[in-house]
Image 1 (tube, rainbow, N blue to C red):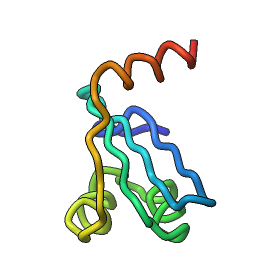
Image 2: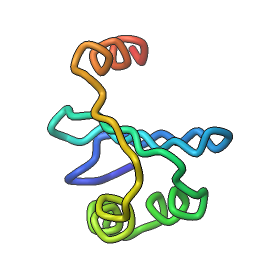
Image 3: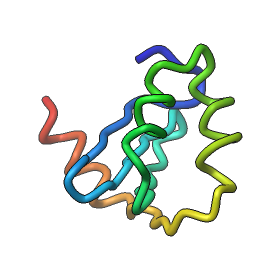
Length: 78
């Protein structure tokens, strides 16, 4: 995915959890996100704009993943 704002996006369709790693290194999980929003995010011409308009302020419950967990995740990708 090419984005100035996002480094990576993951989606668990069974649990409807969207996880976004921003280029700043911050990782957030958004809960009960419908599959059509994940698909829209991935297909958007501007991922950051789609996120801002349809996810960020849409009222989804979310959590900020702590730095230690984010580092473990990055380590498991290598």
